[in-house]
Length: 466
Ligand SMILES: *Cc1c(COP(=O)(O)O)cnc(C)c1O
Image 1 (cartoon, rainbow, N blue to C red):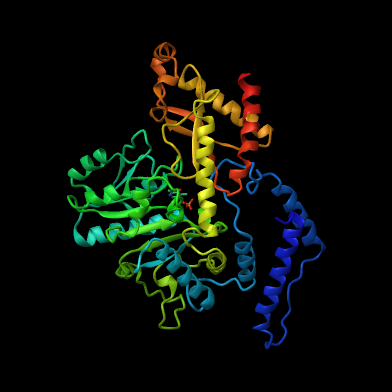
Image 2: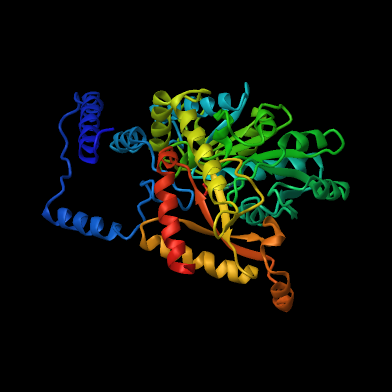
């Protein structure tokens, strides 16, 4: 591995060369004035650089907290290159090349899921991509006179309830089991009421990485008539990983009974923010997007992505970055990209084995399915465990180990870890949640850095509870 400066030099060098070749395509035009940065701009940039130090070191392996993964340098370089044109993927008029690259990049994602037919596009993120999927679900339900209700697990992303509210669709939350997965008996109970028209299965919940039993949810479709949307914003790419938990759920992803999927290239696809993706199984879903606005500029009969997207202007640079990253790191099982995901799963499991019921720590009853680990600290009561987790979180930061906190149902932890008498004395305020520590080990380097992470964690524990 080259050092920091050498890698940065190589990045700038390659970007400069690519920029020259892009510019050559426009060299026949008469020269037009260019804006150059002056001394005042330099001072402002210095100030911005100083202000940006007020961040945690997200790209470093000692950052093992939230779901933040550094984009691949090729994504950054391709984004910067495309930015010099600043294409708009709303219409071919605003970005022909980048629209073609978006169509190719989205087709690669569909292929990864084993879909041979699809309609899809990039969106600003998972939230907007899910909004589009649920919007189509609601439009179809209205058209077919089917129930409008949306059902998702209580561990589904919090935005599903809000999106349903925005769309005017009733939302019902389905209990999760102590494995973090949607409880199918609870789902079936709700389906029997006849008010649910769409079920959202989460492949990789954001808090714990639990994978809903997609194969069994599909099987429920034989007895109940519902549309099935898969929210794989965080977990979708793990279809490529040989060691992802709940393999039956991932193997079910190509099933034609799935109507739509969302995946976020800006989570596990090594992309800068502003890159989600929605796929529809049935391309005729596109008819709901039809509009004939007088001020957009569809000047050719070919497909303009703005005709199949709720958002109007979108960064063509996002598509170029994703396309370039896929060329360098294709979505193949056993390939370099897949091995990076596998390293994260391995790191999470190894970490879990090393902390669960070791010293003061107890893990959730959810053995990591993907690359997220949640654990808490022994205490007499859930309140005491929560307070200790928060203290260790702060102490770890002082040692440059960056973790995250999560509030999880107490039923995710073995009840024996708390003192029964102390809990029953505090019963009046018996909490249903416990604050625990959470690590998303999503950088492949996390696997090699585990010993260092654990030694810093141990030092933080000693400082808090001796
Ligand atoms: C992150 C996430 C979302 C929201 O996606 P954004 O890109 O943050 O808008 C939705 N669902 C799941 C499962 C997620 O992990």
